[in-house]
Each structure stands twice: as C-alpha cells, then as structure tokens.
Amino acid sequence: MATKGEKGFDTYYADLFGSRWESLRNALRAPVQQVFRINAFADAQSTRERWGHVARESLAGVSWIRDEQAQAQGDSRGLLDGYRMDLASIFPALALDVKPGDRVLDMCAAPGGKTLILAEALQGKGKGELIANEISDNRRTRLARVIREYIPQDSGVKVQVTGHDAARWCLHEKDAFDRILLDAPCSGERHLLDDASEMRTWSEARSKNLSVRQYTLLASAIQAVKPGGRIVYSTCSLSTRENDSVIARLLKRRDGEARVLSGRGAPTSLPHYPPPIGEPTDYGWMILPDTTGYGPIYFAILEKI
Image (cartoon, rainbow, N blue to C red; front, side, top):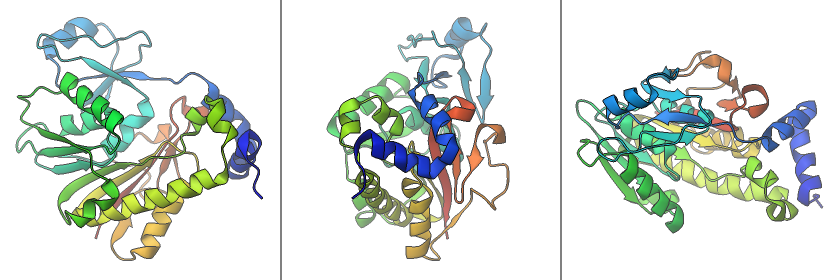
C-alpha cells in the first residue's frame, strides 16, 4: 500500500525530481513572490502619475513592476490600477495568443488574474467576447468582483461570467471558440505544504483522481474549440501525472484531433515567452520556484487540427 501523509508526499516527489526535490521543496515553503501587474484598462494618466517613477517590465502589452509593497488603488473612474499575482501565472495567458475579435473561453477562471490579461488582449478593432467560467459559487463570486473592479463596462469587450461544469461544455457548444484557457484544478503542492491537515490525508490517489478530471476538461475543450483554434492547458502542480501525462492521454485517445506547439522538439522560443524563465517538458513548459523564484506553473499549447 502506498504511504500516505507527508512521508508519502516526499517519497512521491523525490521519485519525480530526484536530488532536486530538497531545493524545490524549500522553495515551495518560501513566501510566494508576486509582481504588481498594471491594469491596462485603468486610466493611463493615473497610472503614470502613480507608477511612472518605478521601473516596469513588459511583454506583449502586459506590464508589471516588482514592488512587494505596491497595493491597488482606484483610478479616476474607480477602477483598480493593478493586480498582484505570481509572475509565472502571466505566461499561460500570454501563450494563448488572444487577438481582438476572438471568442475566448476561460474554463476555470477564478480567481481572475489570467482572465484580466485575456480581456486586455481583446481590446482593439473587433473587440471580441470572453466567457469567464467558474463552477464554484464562492470562487465565482470573487471572480465577478474582480471583473467589476478592473474592467470598465464601456470597454467594448464583452465579458460574461458563467458557472457551468466545463467538462460538459462540449455537449452544448462544439467548434465554437477561437481560444480556450484551461487552468485546471490541481494538487497545488505549495498550498499542501502550508496546510497540515490536508497533508496528513495526502495520498497518491489525490493526483490520480485529479488527472481524471483534468483529462475530462481537456477533452471537452478540444471539442469546444474551432479547428485551427488554440488551447492552453495549465496547472500549478508539479506532478507529471497532472501535466504531461494528461496531454499524452489526449493525444493517444483523440489521435489526429490536436497537435502540440510546445515542449521538447518544438521551437526553442515561444511567442511572448522569454526562454530563461522556464524549462521544457515533453509536451509543455514548467516554471519552477527553485530556479526562478516563481511558480510552479506548467502549461502546454495545443492546436486543434
């Protein structure tokens, strides 16, 4: 019988990462490093006056500052001017490569940081539509509040919050979206290490059960996206079972329906992605905190054939 609790947890991840696990574990126990991402919908003059003296970094129109003390404030219209988030979480949203006019589905959207990036990318000619879906009532309430606080009603970008079971989305809409982001529910090892009660009940079955749900969500996404459309599958898990293995299962079971645009064997540089921050896996990319200070985040880019 597999060992449960913290001992089993350490054994499982040591098997995955070998001698690296100790430094990775220590990095996961360290305080989360976040950046302050500037809200592109906020009044430009207000943000310049407040943050013009602080060095900014930007990528594909997304800007952030590395100020641990920065807190969001309302602009001239009451919109909050920044959102604190893990820098690693920005990259799956950028990898979706959303364009104005696209119809976009964020399948598991809460808490909303990635959703805001997708909405910003839809600005411009054609505007587009974004459906931000979250099945959990409590998380969906938070998501709706974030959207109200950061996106003006007159932005021209149509944003709809829904509460459906995304695994069943394909029963109602097929070939319907240009882009789908699936930030799937996952083990969240960083959270586990901070929660003694959850750690006591940990077993390998946790990751196995999650991978079943993740595959069901991804299979739904591949049916809901248009031919030629893009899906980004993302987790904050370290488990290969929840990352590359989910992609491998999709490619095997739905052979000929999708191709992978990331990972080993793919071009070494991805759109909107600076190579130094991550490392390739078989089908995707991982951003790990022991080498970058951010994450963990796994993501893979798929295109429907």
